[in-house]
Length: 405
Image (cartoon, rainbow, N blue to C red; front, top):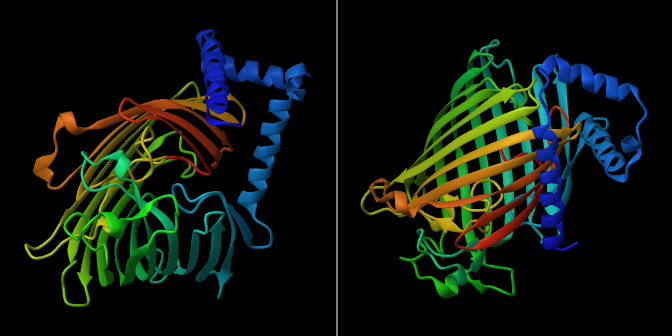
């Protein structure tokens, strides 16, 4: 099915659901009673192909959430535009009297993206208030995109590069309250790029020079030190319908070789969910801010700079469409339940990257808008389809496993 057909189906469902929404005048209690009465009656709709399909996906996703003897299938891409992927994660808790939790996972996609992860967690490292995590990850992403730096980069200058990195981090976290935590991270990161694997794109190093793409021919080894804090009152992390999330972190990357690419990065995120009609309708809001700072003789490698564009922030633009040393993104969604297992959404996104914080301009923000479908359970979104539009670059269709936020 091509993208136009998918867009037509999404638009048709959107119009149908809007018509149904316009007819709703009952209170949330009346709505619950109506839903219960309908559930007790055998109707033609319950045997429809779409309803059977969604019920099958919902039941299947519940089984995936529960796992199989400690093994949990992992579906979907490992990164934007990485192609459909398959993998598995093994988790085991209750080791040493519930003092140790362990996980090990691997995933690969049809475009040859690979990701391997391992983790060890001590949830009560020093009583209930302090936990310790040891995490390792290796990423092999052969078809990453780069268009140049800044909001004025040309979509026709699309190039590709191969990102490979390996990291190991220790995380000490203080649990001040069940919803409030803070801590520090420290470890090592080895990261670099090589020629892109997409034969239809020029390799980044052939098009952009060092000043245009800092670190384009560099492999860098970092010492990493970070402090962070998080306040999370969301009802369900994988499919939130009420509550808020606030996170902030400051991370320093120290170049271990002759120092050229040392920098400090600040990240902050705020999410807020406004439910009504017994959580069957939700207004979801998000703000993301990332900034970097360096000494006068240092630079931030382009592949470690903040980027926007794609299915997780600016959905009317291609993946990783804009790179810059600083970024700001704002998202708003109105989500509603069409029926059990299927939500729809209308959304608006706006974002910008800039060389310095003083370079942000209102007229430089790019915006996108669109419609989306979410096949879900109470705890998570199994399948998400978003059709985004932008005035500058038309439409973008994305299919993902998992929520946008």
